Length: 220
Image (tube, rainbow, N blue to C red; front, side, top):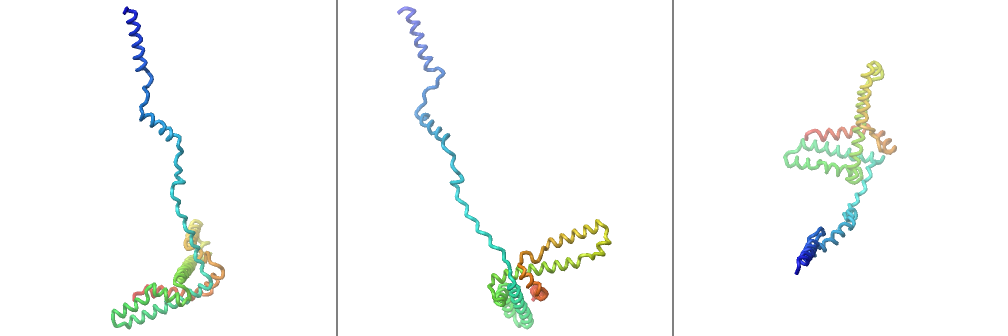
């Protein structure tokens, strides 16, 4: 074998070796081949619809309509409150004459809030639940009427306002407006017949309510 032949064979062997370890990457193994389609699928798969998969929220129940007392409820309020006042008066007198602690406890049990409400509802001719709504509504009306009357008494006369310096007068008038706004209209939301019925019996109902409060506040 001459030198030329040896040199030619060496060049051929180098060419083969260079092709095997050149710039191209070696073919992927089985694991890499299997992961490629999965990666492609993950890239092309649509994002999950979170709105559709999330559980539906339960629908909220509709709000109950506000209680609106009627003109007939004005009479029911008076009848029920009158009965409660009678029970409180009677209980106070009986407590004075009670001879034992057991007797006193029995009397006090008869004038607990639930017992008074039950007796008042029976006298008013309505259910305990409705009676409680009636009492709450008209107690609120009467309280606002009282505060409105008190604010009127605090209001200076026209002559007094005229004699005030402008800045002082403006401050007094603003304070009065804020007081009236804080208590609001006693008859807001009430129908005209209900307002008329309250106005007709306002003094009597206010006296009943005041006595009821006093009897509850006084120690037995």
